[in-house]
Image 1 (cartoon, helix red, strand yellow):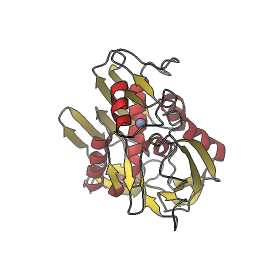
Image 2 (cartoon, protein in one colour):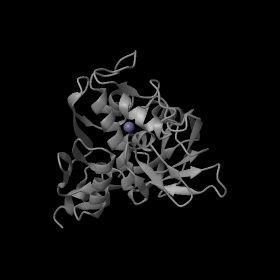
Image 3 (cartoon, protein in one colour):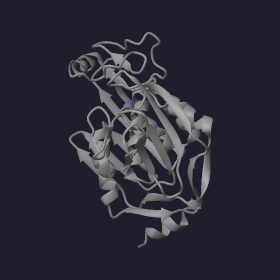
Image 4 (cartoon, helix red, strand yellow):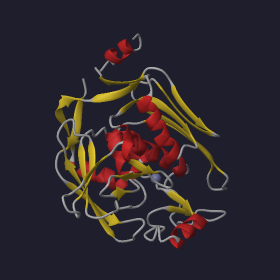
Length: 296
Ligand SMILES: [Zn+2]
């Protein structure tokens, strides 16, 4: 049996908000077993809270946004990807304003925060979503599929008609080590002309070469270049891990994603939640309980 996890103590991440360009602080705080993951706005009267779940996803263009009547929070996927990889089940994510710090556009600072405070087990078994039959979602040339697997594996493909990106594919088993070394440092990316459109709408005012890879028509504009030669597909893995947290429980499965952005991912999360082949189970180390479910 695997036990649920939270963090050992409070830890803060500081930065600026991508859209406002203003200082933003996030505090991760331990939460009791069976809580799940919540955003809390400390600066609003009554400290309203918002559960991280597909039911509360309100927008999926450019980033995943969660909303409740009192507030919305956008670009949640980078900090959530770390929870997904480290299998942190219960957490309060406290904000002092409307935005999460964008940091360097990767999950590096969020991972560092978790490494600083430490992760601990709680005295309750973890429930996983275990897939007994393949679940597939196809939309045009975009695909998302999950098949039964003893762990969490992602096979992700992208194809951008840009000389610096093109076709990139990555298959990776997700664990603390692989996430820290292969995925967490991969930065978000954007195209110069899109950045200009966003700025004309008063968005992405904090966006810069310090927190994203930016490409013009022919090349990457960041002077330091890429952290990995396939940094783009690695960031897509990071984003997908973040979106998976909106399932509400960790997933056991092998996901294959092709050209899957936040919109397709959230539709896929909904499909997983509604599928009859999705079982919420406490798993033994040998997954024998889940194996039995196959014959039901
Ligand atoms: Zn991203």
